[in-house]
Amino acid sequence: MSIDARSSGDAAISISKVSKWFGQHQVLKDISTEVRHGEAVVIIGPSGSGKSTLLRCVNFLEEFQQGEITIGNEAMGYRLDASGRRVRRSETEIAAMRAQVGMVFQSFNLFPHMSVLKNVALGPVRALSVPRREAEERAAALLDRVGLASKAGAMPRLLSGGQQQRVAIARALAMQPKAILFDEVTSALDPELVGEVLDVMRQLVQDGMTMIIVTHEMAFAKAFAHRVVFMADGEIVEQGPPEQIFDDPRSPRLQAFLKRFK
Ligand code: ADP
Ligand code: MG
Image 1 (cartoon, rainbow, N blue to C red):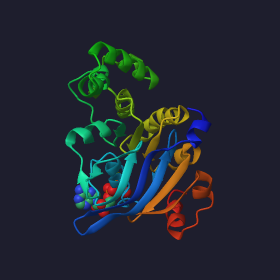
Image 2: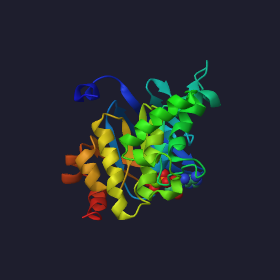
Image 3: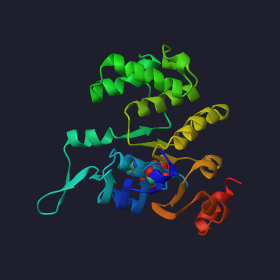
């Protein structure tokens, strides 16, 4: 996707005034931001600030009590009934919307008893009714894209953590999602394996994939994010282009947070 496509048209993901409580504890406080088509947005912030919860709300792995999240132009999770009340969508509708947004976690969660190729092909076969052979051909191409063509027949446990995480990214791509959410996907890896995963993500940014990336890899954010969102204590405290966030942070909380990475 070209830069022009990125800067025009409707938002791919729109998060509008989202608030969420776990019991009495408000963990998301009136969060609003938009992700445009082809945009890579990086979310940074201290542990416990609500980053994972926000991603999980986008994919409706968590319910939220207020606000709206739209994927394309459809509201995720809820619809308004005839009297304007917010009601939960059917599980079928939620599953169909969820399939449009890939998610990659810190733990790779590959199926241990299936080859790498079958791990990548499974989703399209099961959820999109793609014929197995076609799904496996596409899976092979995706493994090539993440640099793992030679591992297609291997079982996941024989791969390094970095390789397993690249398989998890290929598996997300196999669903042909409109966007992919990444939650600290390099945090569990040995330091020498982080780079190969970041390289795949950099390639996706350059290919124009719409992404929301939660990470502590500040150098990656600085170099490849189109926009950086800083969250603290359930709020978006500051957001802007990486140059502004990293070189000219305005809020004391962001300034203090960034000092830890110096
Ligand atoms: P982050 O990803 O930024 O570290 P989280 O979204 O995981 O933050 O957590 C935000 C807050 O929500 C934290 O205070 C956390 O303890 C709380 N929290 C997260 N998940 C749950 C849950 N399932 N039940 C209750 N509280 C939760
Ligand atoms: Mg988290």
